[in-house]
Length: 316
Image 1: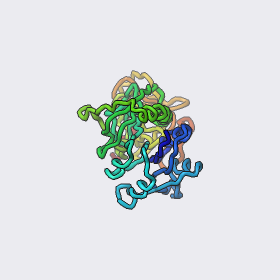
Image 2 (image 1 turned 90 degrees about the vertical axis):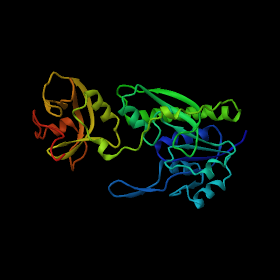
Image 3 (image 1 turned 120 degrees about the vertical axis):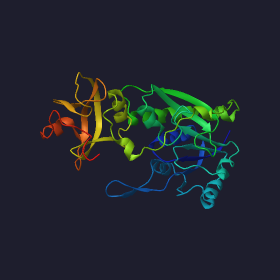
Image 4 (image 1 turned 45 degrees about the horizontal axis):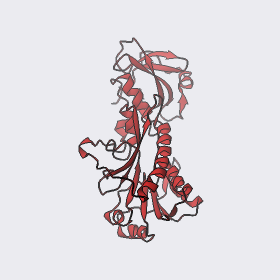
């Protein structure tokens, strides 16, 4: 069956999903994404990854600042989509769009709903130390990630996974799941399942204050904190009152009785920091204030750090 699809998505996560639709031979008549945004220190105006991909295939691109405005959504509806597919688009769709396609609007969401509704489900799945997460495809409603579920797939979270690796696994899993879901949807083989709102948890976008390491937590929690913010937005602590980003660390067993946040050992490839339990963290990859990211060995060659130094105290 030939159907007309409008795809909505913005970041890297959305790209394999769009690629899958094209690979499966669907007619994607338009792509809707966020406006180009300034990026980096030089604030260079940069198009979203989905726009770049769409333009490679000659697909018309719409970039409304606010999809809820009539002039924006009427432009989308002019394409008369049979189905709208979204993946990390970044805006809530108005009822006028949700009601328009005869096959509805479906969303590819990177969690096992109703867990982790919201904009940062990949981060929270690691921050919370979950053993698994996954992708859910559901109908869209006016409430955030609350629509009826069509299909789901589980993805295990490995011990060394971080947001970057898990993002890529989930993006690929989402594309594959969509490839299986659309034919079943068209053939009427899917029974939508209502979400239990009482079981819902939320993963709102990460705030700056959430990035700071609390050394009094357990080593396991701090390890999850570091990898749950790697490679963006990156965890941080303070050293002598200056922000120090912690790009990576390892769990190590320690018998130290020093207060949490104390440097207890300096090794060739990193330095060990005490936590709230016997699992310490060895910082191996960091970025001192005003400097570039570097491995801990390079940082330690400067000789500024000594055993007994306390992290995360001054000016806090």
